Image (cartoon, rainbow, N blue to C red; front, side, top):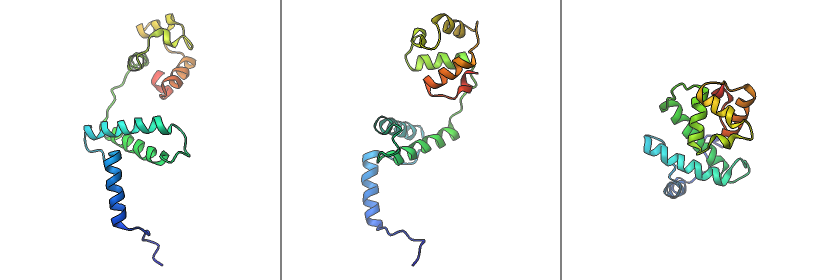
Length: 140
């Protein structure tokens, strides 16, 4: 028995793949338009699958995330930013106000941080990282 061959029917796989591509739009990322299409697919899958590794679409979600990660690694350069610039960006990107962080820091403290009068403490950096799902190093 030859173990190098999978027991597949190429015509069936071709039909299934074509149908799947038409439905999901899963294709290699070759340009920015492809990247945005795959990001949209990832968002749909994130809403449906979440972190449920038993969900039937979980492996598809992992594949899509890996595709995005590879594209970003090769094509996206992030300029270095200070912790306060990162915080300002995340507040704006998430349509939040300083008062929306009241559960972790006073509005005065957040204002002082954004104005450059205070640094972000390690405790606050950990809380912000958890809140915005980013690495704590973004705030240190």
